[in-house]
Length: 94
Image (tube, rainbow, N blue to C red):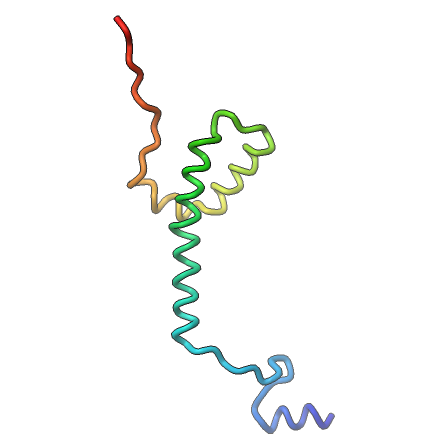
């Protein structure tokens, strides 16, 4: 009971145990870095992975690919206008 009263007097809740507040700039930079990784870095790596493994993947790996496309869809949608992974044009011999 005494600990609960001293926590109330100092303005700290028992759940937080009076942890120091992080700097707002550090939090903003962390959000920016994580959103950049989620929207740009991982989808770019996923595009390259899908390009290499699409035609030779096993059924389990293909299911995993579908999950990754679902999970990183916003980033894939952002990168899609700038990337072109269509097959190369075939050369016909006459």
